[in-house]
Length: 131
Image (cartoon, rainbow, N blue to C red; front, top):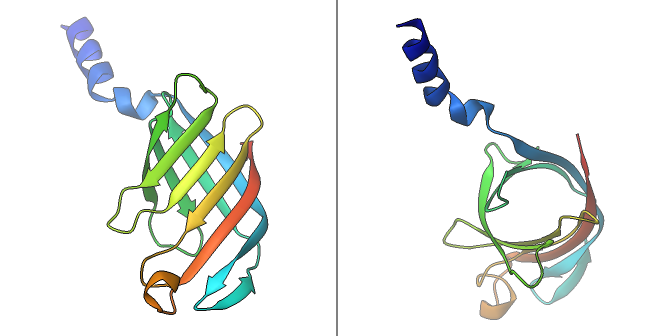
């Protein structure tokens, strides 16, 4: 009976014990647009966590109150490169290289430049380090 309960508990708590990759990231450069104006943005720091098959990315930014989720794809001919899109009606794009730990992050909406609106469009580049 003890073995059965132990196995049942291990199965139940398996997601808690599953491995994931956690990274601390900082931008090296951030630039973009606000309406028709070109703007330089301050550096941004955030934490990333990938599940062990790199198909799910969670980003935690101190400015945001909750984690942002991204779905990632790996092209088999480029297995070290991830293409991640935010799970949202306004998807941002996060590109990441698993070997050199560099990223490019695109943030923008149709309510910015395309529609003549004032929403910002930002392109960031930077690097990440494992905790």
